[in-house]
Image 1 (cartoon, rainbow, N blue to C red):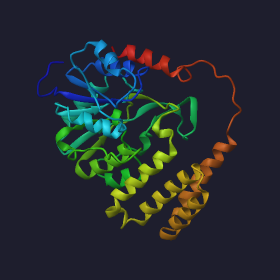
Image 2: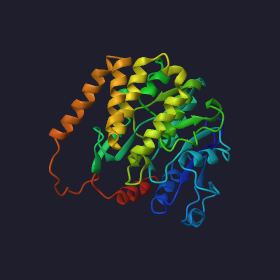
Image 3: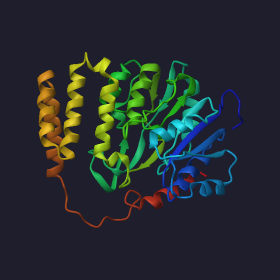
Image 4: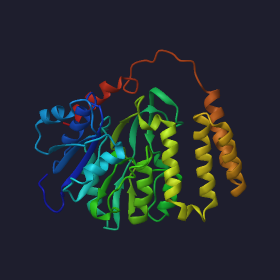
Length: 332
């Protein structure tokens, strides 16, 4: 594709910390896209590994390396990357995930055809490492987020996003001019900084959500999404930053209390979890229905839990490195 008004420059930000094993495939899945008018900014979050040498060895002029002086986490690294972007459109990649072939071309075509009031295009990913019921482990696969709950053009997208984050950054393309001022990501949030940003984003612009997956994601043992304590602190930051909406929305406040109660129970704080459950029912009695639904899902998972057996080899049960390598090759 030639660069003109219909093919604007896309700035892709890829933060990384000690992911030398998975980073080359993640980079290849971006540089191998059919849409070529892009720059890829790899932000090294002060890794002990020699990420600079790995990046420079690739030798693509569209690739730039930026090293932070101190480790600050994914949100801080993305903010650093945003200081270096030159493109009209902005995208993100994770150092252990893959873009599917055609991802960028499809999303650029979509966003350029939409009215300027729509500043974001997003879609789901194929997620390896958990299933639709949020059971984690090898061989489990889900489409996330579930396309059945997609954002609709005419709805209150802010309140929808307060109930459920629909934006994974590596699945999304942003108009730079439509987004909130910098910094985009809360540097104090140890997790869920993308969810907090999505809510702020929906206050500023409209979001278009497609249903066809555009990326392949992997849940690793050290993924932030597996760290319940960090997730809990991130949710508390979301509650704190959206008090103006939550003050007049008892149903949403009760929803967040139940969400936090599940996390408190998971990190060994059952008494605090019980207090949050009681408070959620006090401020919004119908929330007991959500509580019953959660308990029902947990019971069904327990009843249907199968004894572990040696899995047959398949694409879904293949080692993550095999999937990364094979899919990265298809994007070249």
